[in-house]
Length: 179
Image 1 (cartoon, rainbow, N blue to C red):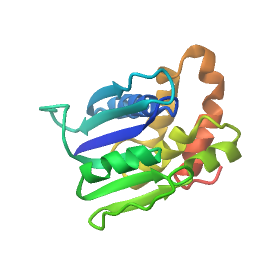
Image 2 (tube, helix red, strand yellow):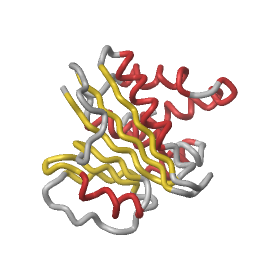
Image 3 (cartoon, rainbow, N blue to C red):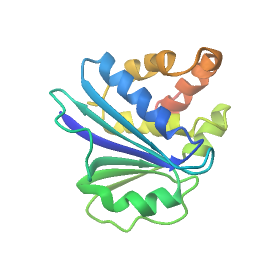
Image 4 (tube, rainbow, N blue to C red):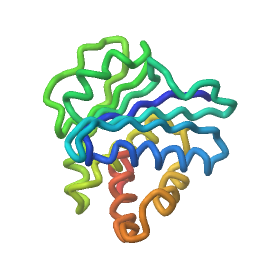
């Protein structure tokens, strides 16, 4: 198994954190990982993305121009990165915020009402968790759900761990699991 994944959105949507959580979970499951974040110049509201590589074997290069999966949280990210998904790949879009339709017909488009799921579960900040839940539902070889949930205690700061039960609930709902 070798998968190159892009998370993209604007600052404050938790795309860098989502990538970090996925890496920690995959490491917990014994996989090799790479995580390269990229930030815009702005503090909040600017661009943010990260490239995650997960592999059963060695990772030769953590940088790639094309991705097997792209998780996009907003319209500018869709417009910028839709073309970076390999033919036959998957594009997960936050349909709560993205109001344009993807144009590609050679990839699988998966829509997730991430912000709506997050708000219904009790948090307006956990849309990234809904996207992670859906990602693991459609690509279960990346990591186990249990490792994903456990990764929260490593990736989330101690003062914010009190929100992890909501984060887990949002992941489960995003992945199609009744809570």
